[in-house]
Figure 1 (cartoon, rainbow, N blue to C red):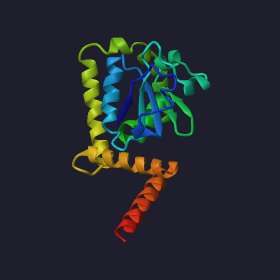
Figure 2: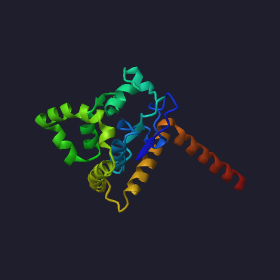
Figure 3: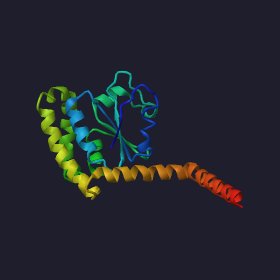
Figure 4: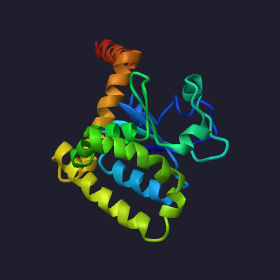
Length: 207
């Protein structure tokens, strides 16, 4: 998993860390909230394939050019979890959580959120929870909640990555992404051409 916490750059949202050059989802969360932070840290355990860019929007000077272009500012992000998919579509609150859980393989958490009746209740409850999240983060609650989400995240990670150590899958995905980027940028072709020239030059010297 990769976390971007550099809020000083206006383009921070547009330039995720190099290991997530083209994330499937970009999540904007409040790291100043212990309850929120506990859940995000737990969910990151399931992101063994580096599918998500995690962006902390809690700093007072936070600004995201991509979000601003769509009329979304820090004030809105601090009121509810915001998520942007690869197509540029924004999801907020309950819809954002349901999509994030599903993408990370936490179907046990995602499926109930998709039920029409329960989704309506959650949409009604979520604004209250978001407004009182600091109070709900009182000592112990964040640890309990984080532990509960973490259990589901670890199960999802083991299903996505059968390796003994899920980080092995993550590392492999990193190199796959780097290779894809090198191919798209032409860097790989340049390196191959350079190696060929060196090889031919060495042959000429031998002759």
